Length: 175
Ligand code: NI
Image (cartoon, rainbow, N blue to C red; front, side, top):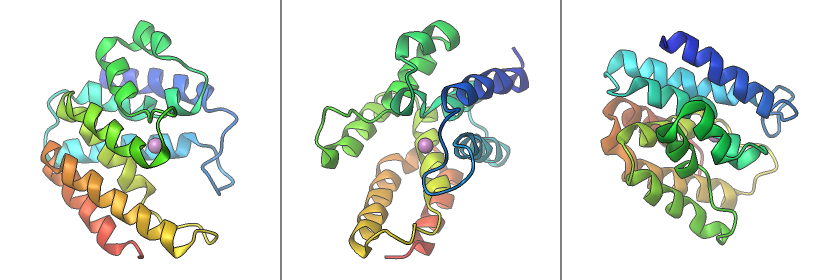
């Protein structure tokens, strides 16, 4: 299937899954976040070729479905195949772990897979490094910035252009 058709199939699926959600603190649909992550992957691919571009694109569009909706990994595997399911699973934080361990655990699972999954994690964080919501404490802001540095350190080898873009975002982030 052409990547454009694959894109449509994934964004249709994700739109339906996230249909009742907004971007946290915003008055527009959550799918905006998802499509921004995919946009980062597409631009990154034009700057530095991504080997398995289809895998990165699908995982970008589906990356929050298991974590934030009632979609399960069986459904993802049946519709999009095993590699996409494994990628989306690794990008999903384990809610059974203490909050402070969830990111590291996810990063360790991402590192066991192909670099495309690490690219999606970097694209996700690039997209999320927007000016923090007004109600965030300075401690929460600096924790988020520290966590972003951890993502950078662990995944920078996955894609040099995304890594550079992530570092630029971190440097401009307050805290
Ligand atoms: Ni996300």
